[in-house]
Amino acid sequence: MNEAQEHAISTKRIIKTGFEMLRKTGEYKDPEAYDYIVDKFLGRSKLAEDLINCLQKRLPVQQEIKVLDEAAGTGALSLELAKRGYKTYATDISQDMMGKLQAKAKERGVNISPVLANSNNKLPFEDSSFAAIVTASANRYITDLDTFLRETHRVLNKGGYFVWPILGADIIPWKRNSGLDQPTLSFSLAKQMEKHGFTVQTDMIGSLFRNTLKGVPAYAIPTYLIGQKK
Ligand SMILES: C[S@@+](CC[C@H](N)C(=O)[O-])C[C@H]1O[C@@H](n2cnc3c(N)ncnc32)[C@H](O)[C@@H]1O
Image 1 (cartoon, rainbow, N blue to C red):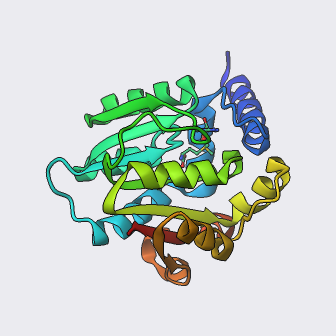
Image 2 (cartoon, rainbow, N blue to C red):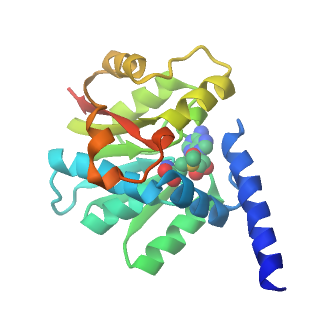
């Protein structure tokens, strides 16, 4: 196969995966192409760095601080958490995505505990298991917002943090895909978090100016909702 053919195939894979990302089912069949897209077009590793900074300001790294990355995919957030020294757990519904996450963790010499789980269901963890929970870019698959928030709250320690970035790119596909009358905008989601027992801070303006997010396209700039379990 010559270089041009290889390029044609990878472009095809990229386009196919791009469409998969917009679909309702949330099935990601090509984790390699996914990884390429989120880094190249969405600045995902920059988001990961910025998001974990936002967490680390509130929750300094200490031994045995357990943090969960929900709907972790190929692990942008988990890898950053593990690199900084948090004891990292990752859930996702897709075995393929978790496989890629594990391969990346091995390559980088970090430990991540992968657990297959559906974020619309009860999570397979005891109450108060984690000091923090993070997630990114899976809003459109949260079809049961109440279960998602109730479970996230349940498995967090008292005083623990839930950092939830709301990206412009999430809002419209979520609304269209869910077919449910559920909120998508950060202010409404903050209200839902409060209903489930979080106190909520938002960081909207800061993300527009931080150096860590330079070069991230506008549709992937986050508004952070930072919930703390009362
Ligand atoms: C756009 S990717 C985001 C992955 C990762 N958080 C990131 O920032 O790159 C969405 C992920 O959500 C997962 N997913 C879809 N539906 C899910 C569900 N119901 N529960 C848990 N994970 C789900 C997919 O398998 C996929 O890995």
